Image 1 (cartoon, rainbow, N blue to C red):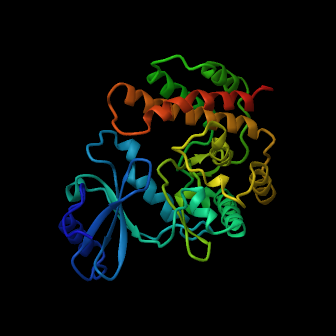
Image 2: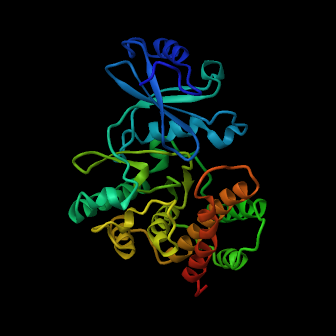
Image 3: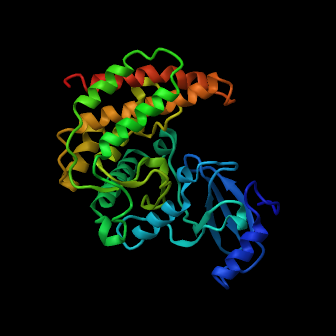
Length: 340
């Protein structure tokens, strides 16, 4: 690690803050490095030569505090600590922007691997791959089984009207990035709007649950679920449906999305759904609608990225390919809902 401060992290200020909040926690000079992780918030590993911790803060120059609410992330992780859902231990939440220029929180460093590709799983063999995937599903069931009120999260979201708000939100997002004709997108939205299902009992929803958002240890156990930026109270089948949609990504050759589901041994989509249904006892009869919504959401997200690229607001490789994946995602959504 470099002794220099990573962008957005003043190590001397952080050390002074931790010495005040948790005397004796830090035993020596802090070093730090920025790491990948999260949709947009910045993640750092810091250490004193003996112990390591993780610091999360909003991106540099952010202007919408509600979009990068450190308090919400810290709250849900702290609340889940006594449950069966594996999460890092939280250490401190700082809302004082004088320390690092933005709110941030500190949690324990958890050793483990976020599997991002089929190649990484293939070397483990089909049996271990299946075991890891099964635990991913079981952990999602455990999350959705947590009573929000029992862990102090009764006010963490508004479950009433959750699906309608989701649909409105992504339609608004789509309208803000429309710059080309997207065949079938209005048909997909209208199909979804006509057939919004009645939600079952609400649960804590992760919002972006997938294998590369969990840490797996050398014994193939899930040690921590990460990246709670999108979490809220709502309809848990949206989490399951997104897991299914990510698994179906091979049908559109979407290289920017993790391809772990193509590894030998990874359960089929039907097996994923069956395992969740058997363990959770939730009614999944309307799951196709949720999967259609997941494809709509993914299409809107990728179209937003492509829109920024085509307007010169983003630079880098691969953005043309992202743009080319949008219409196939819309087509998958319409195929999923063809009977509605």
